[in-house]
Image (cartoon, rainbow, N blue to C red):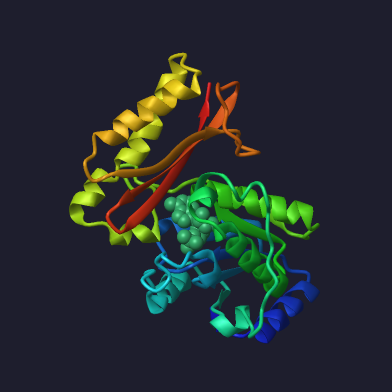
Length: 281
Ligand code: AMP
């Protein structure tokens, strides 16, 4: 495994691999890796002969009041974990390599970025799309793997790739969960033991909603009430949003026809956690 820190060295490596006819997979991350990230890496290994994992805490996707400075980082541990997975390259660019002085160009996926998390975090998906577009230009992967935990992010990236005719296949990977159902996240490290116990209410409420749909409920209003009531039982949970929307357009739906995305964001103290589930009839 090699650690590459400069854009030119990353480009040179990709160019060589492409010339030799090898397929390159990219797994973009912000580091502080957990089993969710590693599951994406294993998926990438099945899809390409060469795997690049990028580690970059991207400042442009954090709002001014958000946790950019406090975001957990442990590059050495991340490298040890990736070494065990036998990947080829850790791409770890410096801030100035990703955003040269005077950078003023952004990628904006307009409507898809406005709902759900985008409504609470203005500019977040513009930052995500810009950083991912840059990573695609530098690493030039044939395929890139993203987690369905960040469902809206996955849809934004898919739309960007389609709209800008980027030559990369986007793969969505299912959410990896702790044994009690909590979706794995680097931000789970912020949780106190009490908050950690309470946080299982996210996945529990999503499961309850699915059971309700299987028993015949199709009204979004009733399902949202059910989820709100379940979350309200947890004193430590502060609901930011819960929405039932079309899985493609992310627009609110009033009834479930075939399937719908149930997505939520909940704060526990310092931690803002998200989770989602596609509800099917
Ligand atoms: P992050 O480091 O949080 O930016 O995540 C990097 C990638 O890992 C993104 O594509 C995430 O959606 C994905 N990811 C993070 N946590 C999980 C999880 N629990 N299950 C599946 N994918 C995940």
